[in-house]
Image (tube, rainbow, N blue to C red):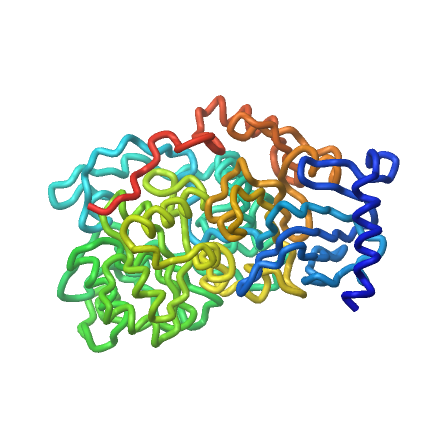
Length: 483
């Protein structure tokens, strides 16, 4: 089959190289890409990133319904008449999955670092134990602000998130039924305070938190249960995990409900942060088949410490990467990857390779959200959530790990092109709107129910929102260093 397809491929590529404007039905140049318009299906030729290997000159065929119909080097037989996007110098990845953010804080820009570090999240939330309260802001449930926050993700190649809020269109919101954008899944449960301790309750020897903590039945009955656990580095943070992983730790109920320890560390559970977990705790998580979301920048900027990710990976725990939020974390997954890579090179001795880091924002992130049947990898039958990157070196996985909005060529959600370089977008989906990203004119394709690109940019200017991207290090970006 492959030998028979080679002449066809040569003819097609020669035609694409010699062709003229799309308006006449022939190909146009799009920087490193060439396009030949055909039917509603799309055949992409690029280096294709798969979980176990990168495929140079790979081919991915997206059907008219937005699902992947073929992956490999022999898709031409199925692709006769399809629209062709030939980008042999570029790298095609699954769309990135951000498993942890707080979109209601998308307007809260980071402040200059004061050097203060905390032992527990309630110290910076509530100003406890003699600390200065860091959270001197409130959530803003404004659809335009949340759309700007989602757009901040999208321009860097992210196509799905778990963020507690949602705007219509743009990225998928895996914690809302309406935000699944057609995925054949149940939404995940996203719980910030699974111990019902939002008031600032800190315990060290019992489980006398709020009256409505998460239960094993709730977690086991969910499609996926993503919850903040052990966010901090002290005994109070470690106590949280004891109350969520053992039934024999505290058997005395408190008046009004709650007060006893539960054990909800089951395969549906995904622990967010988990900074205070010991090696024995991580071993328990591994035995139970639970997952973890790692947010190193926010952990380091708040606590000077983060998850023992090397031990977690050694034990076989699925670890996903999450940006946390703008105030103390990363503005997008690209910057969170930059932090993870820096930490790996400066403190972890290169224990994490480029492919592992890439997998933390693709397949492992989808696994942590129990959405890997639909997204997270480029495979036949899965939804065509895709991101095309222009690499800076010969390592194809580094094109994503070291990527930025400036290297994003195009982004698709469910086979629909949403964002990208003007030449590519204008060639594949004419009529999309101009969008300025870090001083470059890009294209954003408008969706029903979403403000126009011009309206979003005007609103962002009026409200002085944090930009979509920066040409270099973001303004006041929280530090990524252990202390």
